[in-house]
Amino acid sequence: MKILICGAGQVGWQLARHLSTENNDVTVVDNNPALVRRISDAMDVRGVEGFASHPDVLERAGARDADMIIAATFSDEVNMVTCQVAHSVFEVPRRIARLRAQAYLDPQYSDLYRHDHLPIDVIISPEREVAKAALRRLAAPAAFDTESFIEDRVQLVGLSLGEDCAVLNTPLRQLSELFSTLRAVVVGVRRKGKLFVPHPNDQLFPGDQAYLLVATDDVGRTYEIFGKSNPSTNRAIIIGGGNVGLFVAQALEKGPHKVRAKVIEKNRSRAELVADALERTIVLNGDGLDMAMLEEANLHKADAVLAVTDDDKTNLLACARAKAAGAPLTIALVNDPSLTSLLGPLGIDAFVNPRATTVSSILRHIRHGSVRKVYSIGDAEAEVIEAKVMGTSPIAGKLIRDIDWPEGAMVGTLKKRDAIIAPKGDTRIEEGDVLTIFALSSDIPMIEQLFQVSIDFF
Image (cartoon, rainbow, N blue to C red; front, side, top):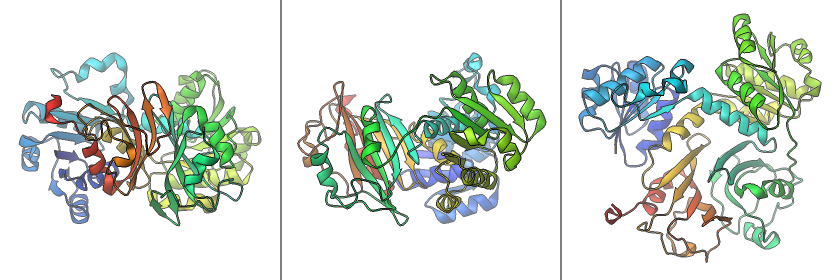
């Protein structure tokens, strides 16, 4: 595919990094020459300097024969106009825009994005995606990473392993023998900073971070086996009343568990606006780094502290302070992936990466074949892919052990008819099956090929 990425910031950088390694023809447009130079020097992509919404700039970038344009600049308005120009002047078939302002996202204005108005095929809201990720972390305190697949019937769970894990020093192939009815598969392990897909004879050790794909009904049992408890969150403190903090608080108010939350916001006018938008949530005007403010928010009674300000260091320090004061669960929003190495030393339980969540949202609309969902792992190191098997897919009708899977990929779960199963070597892949697959970035193109449908399908 020929793809234009408009905006060479964090999201644009990550998208270019993903897509350029998968035999796509990628061009990145930005009006900052330093960013264009940096991205074109670091990757096999073409860089074009200029304003993405200008027709002459898009012409130079090759918009006339582009298959897709992704508008991810810092300006909503530039992103919208870019999609309009791409459609009206260059007839680019697929247009994706990142929009932040909530006024543009109100469902009552959805007609604005019809083809005869502002022709945007997919709208990505970073703040809403991040808020969803934060809510998933709150719902799974035992995990440092989590995502749902196959209509919430399968969960990706990331667990940090301690000495109390019952399956340490045990070959992974024995897990299915010890727990024959458990639908959980260890698909990835991070050890000493390196992420890899384990072999059946590999063992788990203290300090490992394990990624598992688990049938949702078996998540509780999986936690127990891996030495984790997963207490419910009844009271939460949210530090930061921006769009992310507001979305989280609103979702907690409307959620089935009716979590009682308090929001701490430093800016007085913003605190008043957030208070007006919420019904039952108490909003405090103050600094989340101030211990007196945390005590006023009843930190000693809180089950979780979520720091989602627009400053990484504030989020990390606020969580570290709350953890030192006894908070059971702390979650920090961290934009800079280089700072995630501080989570362990600071005692922070989990983090949310806005860049990764936004990139995951965009990638699910780019992947080829019958891919239905994508979740990015770490710093673009791997992906979890949900894909449906079509009748003419190369893997249809084959046993799992007879399929030429790449070395860095593993099937975690499989939906066959209406049942979720843990796949085995003699499991036959059939048309209509839905698989979840963990794959290192270098092996993603091969996974896509396995799910491609032949031209006869059409």
